[in-house]
Length: 192
Image 1 (tube, rainbow, N blue to C red):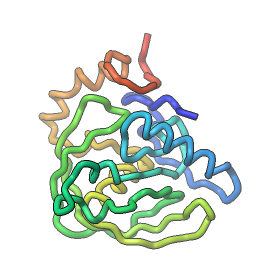
Image 2 (tube, rainbow, N blue to C red):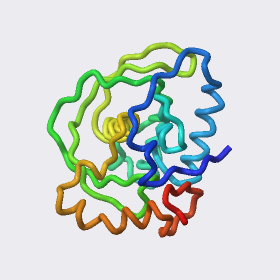
Image 3 (cartoon, helix red, strand yellow):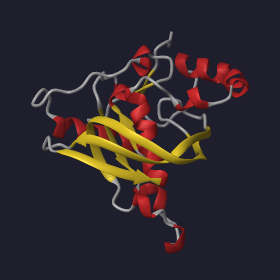
């Protein structure tokens, strides 16, 4: 099932999500639906608040970043990087902060440089409820940080300088009202 993606301005995108209890949901079905939704919108990550759910789960698949790249240009951190993160907790972030132009399915048509630490350690559960503690770096770490922020009620635009945010204000308001062209289903909080 493909969910409509929640647009900027919806209060759920600003809430800190609650943990999922074991056996509370059909997480396999939910994650399959989230992947289907993400792929239909050409995304590389999708968090539960983006489909209107206030729970701690996100899915990622960074392999599209490597498609069409020469072998020497491929990002090794993204090889086979397709995962479901349930009740994730970032334990550490370190390394140099580096810029990358980020975008978001909930904020279509807007992109901007965001500086994030290059490495992280995360604890999470998988679909079989096994706990993992893993380290990621580079683009894989960035995708995780971006999706994790959604679970914390943060958006990539929060990291932009005040002037840039001011310049984007009208575009962001237009998105909330549904005045934006997208080729995937969205749910707009202020559509009249």
